[in-house]
Length: 242
Image 1: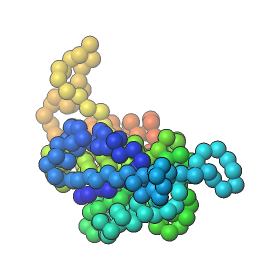
Image 2 (image 1 turned 30 degrees about the horizontal axis):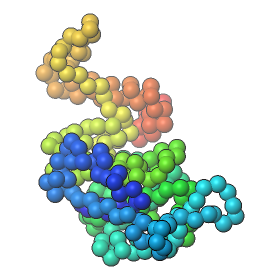
Image 3 (image 1 turned 180 degrees about the horizontal axis):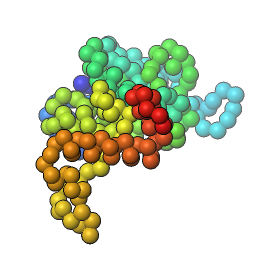
Image 4 (image 1 turned 180 degrees about the vertical axis):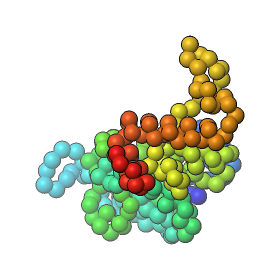
């Protein structure tokens, strides 16, 4: 799996992805990242990538020719890559998106465009038709942090990055599992008694069937309390009444 990041702040990468399991997998070559500076494609000596918006208004807009040249160059290197654009007006990222992308055997390369300022010239969207991705209903300074969120979500599902596949199979929003709409159950570790609070007895029993039932019930409880939208989807999926 390869990523090509288009940004005006290449020094932001790999960022968090250079650490822990993602960083180890990067150094081992399980996945790779190339970061390209959009300013390298600017047409003037000042390396200008933005200009004032037509129609007036605050802020600046990234110029179409600079972006087109950057994207074209990346696509010459990765002709089969999926192009993504990080933007707050995109589809909000869900585990279902990650699952679909990671199970698409025809695409192993990804070009991620990180916008800045007020955004990018709309004609780039019209011409290149990128997948527009948001990580939530809020606005950041640019797309770099959002790009790292998407990449981390994908890298942790890449073959061999996590030692135990069960880790991703049983977590919140795990796709392909019966609990696809549920948040994850609570976790406990040693010691069994801490600050007067004990670990639930069932987890110490060694009875795997009872443990599984307890975890499922806890996942249902947490989801009903915290995410009514997910709980309603889960009930509809299983034919239950909310």
